[in-house]
Image (cartoon, rainbow, N blue to C red; front, side):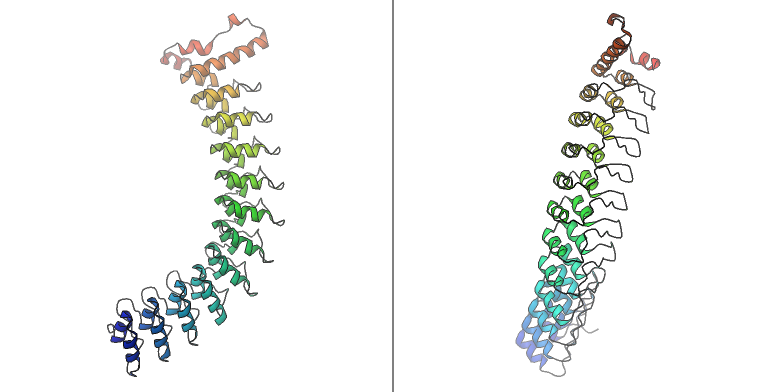
Length: 439
């Protein structure tokens, strides 16, 4: 391939008159590219946004408007559409031999897709007016790309076309334009898309089965969630297929309190739907230290506080393990909360966990419940909560547990208090080696 020609250099320098003089020569080839990037004089002129020189070059009928460079395989139209050079696009489209559907090498998109992705509404209108296919895609439709990037004007332009299908999914993730807009938080685009009768708010993507509401809730996009919840045909409980998590579950795990508050205003939202690991929204919030979310969920009378995950761990179990006193109180104030559930791995109750870890405040709150069982030994070491407290040197907790045990014993057998054996206190005074042998 020969090196840059005088014409190429003149275009690069923006020398309009020199370009005009050279093009008057019939023996000047206007299509010879340089050796580095493979750009023709026309491609170079478009790159430099030199409208006058582009017009001069296109007046030569032997100038090929469809030659792509070797770096990105972009044609002049592709580059102009991507950058939003409307006047240059007009000049290129005036040539009937300009190809509207060439693909660049990265990311492999047509001029219409590039213009839509970058929000160049004027260019989109020009390309559509020339006959570009609004549904053609190299993986994503123009509508999908515009929706993801929040280009509401482009979305409106495309949706004015009756032949635009708003539900075409992309080839990689199987997501619709509505799914992309919802996940990115583009409320205006979501509202515009939902005005089309054929757009369903319940279409799931093919990769993970996630709805637009799932995406919006998971990212904390309150504006989008509010718009979607106004649709009477919306199903707010559709779980994804990867983890079985509903929009409420996803929002709870992400601590999105505003979204959760909106979701719970819908009576048809199921607050107890567990994911594939058995975790409910309440459990996610308790595990994640999110007191505000726990408070909101507990305002719903139909919230079940005892649903365990696949390991047998309940919301109270996690709150007790974390030492979160206010959360523990919120949970045990619900009379139906069972304080004696054990996990499947070590057979530990919330009381056993708190006693073992030294969470004195949590132990005190749990002991306010008359139905808390002091005698459940964990399967890991066979110790009761009192024995765990003694073993780990938590003297204050041991005394609290011993006092409660003595009170129960007095009530049951009327044994004089002087005859009660202060197990926790006596053992704490013993050397660690002796204590270990006794347990």
